[in-house]
Image 1 (spheres, rainbow, N blue to C red):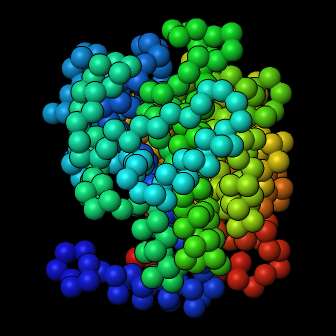
Image 2 (cartoon, helix red, strand yellow; image 1 turned 180 degrees about the vertical axis):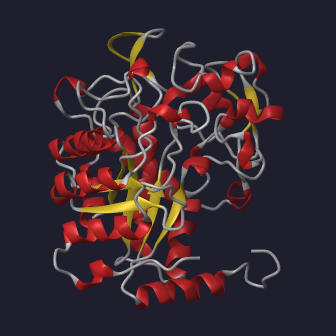
Image 3 (cartoon, helix red, strand yellow; image 1 turned 90 degrees about the vertical axis):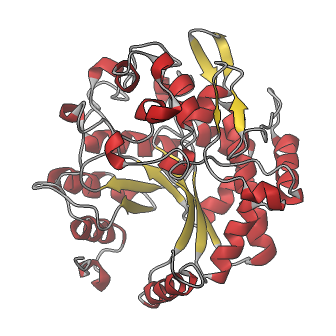
Length: 403
């Protein structure tokens, strides 16, 4: 916060204190879509890496192909639409690998010890925010988004996250990991697959996520043992149901949480103990052209949410249902609005009665996001989730103030 002596620390601490006084647990989160998006590699290896008939290829096609996606147009505005007025310098970043920090070295050593199988973990500290990087897969050169100040100072940003959360008196910290570009850049060929057609494996991305969670977890143990740890998990993170499980065809983080739980169960145990696996069961589509529905007759929002939550249950991972208010970010509201699945009043009622009672909790994004006629409001969503989890509780009648 500019113009404030302590960059707004005191104001933030005061707000956190007020929330906690009202019975609200406050987590300091690291991540989110923009923090996870590397425009150049997301364009080249995720969106353009699987041919021209993919859900988001239209973003590249309108510029005439990937060869015309450059820094000048934010690589065809694949991370955010031009209307958001983002910048490559300030709006995006990646989860770094702080190789100079002994604490990160300890986390990677843990992953290497417990990876239990092939392939062996490979680390990529050369993907350093603020520095040039040439992708070996595509040959594309670009500047890695984000700030590399931590590297100049020899610090570990994951330990700094925990320290800041402690100083702000937060309940816990949250890791919102969505690096699709990493999975598509460092994938390996799956059993029976080929380099050109797949299926593939995203072991290296699971290893990176494990190292991040281990580093943060160790930081909590060392400085704030009572602090909780949570993570935002992809809807497709635990595909352990029937024929839908297993093979990954690129473009998302399918199976990452399932593999994490299989190889590094102690890390998931800490998240589960904190009721901290929040499944992003939103930004879903019912477009049959791209096989968006996970199974036959499973295309409505409530059925898809139920399907994905069942994969977590089958994998033995207790998790929270995710709700998105207002207009979804995907599919694009300007390109494919017809196949969007917004949280309507009807859909909320179906999810709250058929899915939510079987889950450990719920969360939603975001309180003050505007909603259109027929869409569920923040207050209605909070009350519905509360009543499913805490039936009869007086606090379920609470309302959010208007801005």
